[in-house]
Length: 89
Image (cartoon, rainbow, N blue to C red; front, side, top):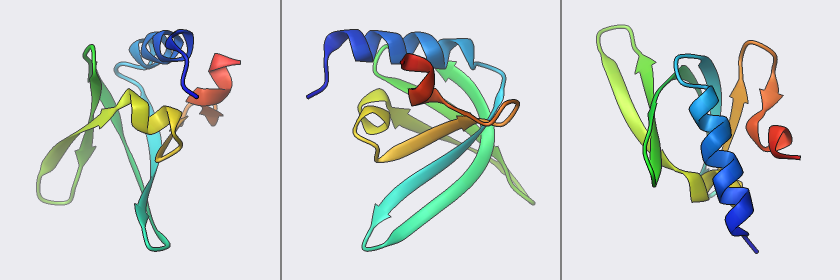
């Protein structure tokens, strides 16, 4: 069960990662896993955005904090290979 303290701590930790490079592993279902690297651009009350640089264009994707807490999305800081959820403990 997700506790309010976990959500608050996660929002704080993501806020500290603004401007830093992260690796996101997303579970797309049916054994499909997508891994991308991008920069945390901003953090809002319900979501945070990550900017991905492509070959021809850049793209921004918003992720929910709940997705991280339910392990649908894994966020790892590239600078020290630390999983954001590990920072919460």
